[in-house]
Image 1 (cartoon, helix red, strand yellow):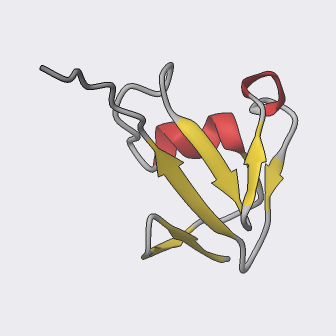
Image 2: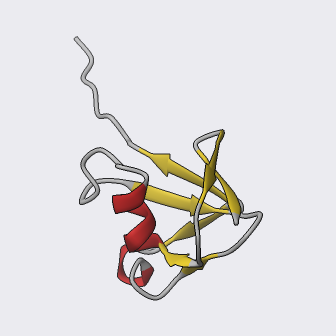
Length: 69
């Protein structure tokens, strides 16, 4: 199965949950990541129940805060 993670192809052997994909794809700081699956945001509560399928596109997004002077 082929999925795209952050613009890069990734081959997986079976459908994975978003939570499993975070481990397989070695996501940095998975407790803080926001996940977009095929253009739709996945709620953190749904990581364990949302499945990634062949051909899906996944983006791991990290929001950074900044300050103004």
